[in-house]
Image (cartoon, rainbow, N blue to C red; front, side):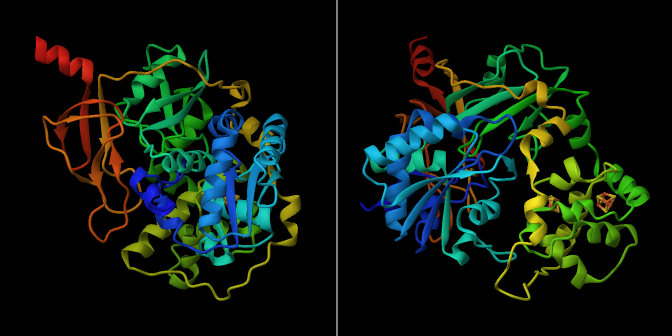
Length: 451
Ligand code: SF4
Ligand code: SF4
């Protein structure tokens, strides 16, 4: 089996992103492979710790992936502020004698340093074209946890666990390894909070993560963290606004100051994304479809809504509004050129993470979230068949079957984009639905059989 087949068999998808199947990414030929270790979402602490705890595995997985895509250079991107981790990685690159190929590069502590296109620019000076992807400028990007999973795939270990940070207004922020399919509430309770009535939880980082409408969900391969805040926290109020209210506020108060555009990371890379124009189109009900198409260039980083706009408006929402409208009519933005140059003003308009964290009201919670040895042993795991971009996995087990942890339970449908899924614990299959496969842990299954 070559690396591609091993990665495909292991069910690896981009950890922490949209969950794009990694075996498909590895089919490209690239000049650079880039490791995204920026972890720019405030409070999340997974990647920086994985790189310190498993440097050899991550470097080896990353190197193997880089060689597979034919890259001539493999660049590890990590924020320079993580001095100790940078030193560990550099030392291990030397010790593993891969220094000719793998290089550690320091990133500035800005938001959103981990946006794929910002990362490509910071590490290579190349700008991904509008509406494009990194391979168009010869780059393949992978996250540090994904590189770790590539290493495990090379020793025949599929993705059955993931790392999660629980942070925010909690007594004990922490990072933990849990089986895929673990009930989220089991993890949240380890924070020291028992009663969640007065709390709101963000699924993911504070900037891009959505508010959870219920805590009944289950961890997927893409889960990276949960941020717990009081219900009356500024960020919770801001993120919980209804579409109707956002529309009303947007209509009444936009002064067209352009701050949202001037700080937009995609605009600063030389793209045409200009959220103030979307606000204008929304507020004056402009019908120029050509002008609305730039909404499709938004990466939804939320910087305009949560930092730039002095009036506290919702320019990202305006983009989403037009994106939705255009998608309904199957209208796509077409770039007018293929070469892009970052705007000269970019270097003066980068947003330091500390300023962002202060603006979000998160400074009191900007603390370490150390890796814990605590073990979560859920009685039942619910393995989603849709943890990735593409078609849902097709179950290859039946209710009543006994499965071992690591056993394949769902395959990629023939001829489709997708990812395999595996049992994250040993036990009996107790339920199969369109969206999930449930497994009851071995000891519970056994005690039930005996009882
Ligand atoms: S949305 Fe806010 S930042 Fe953008 S132009 Fe209007 S007032 Fe200015
Ligand atoms: S969310 Fe706002 S700042 Fe971010 S890319 Fe979209 S328009 Fe630009």
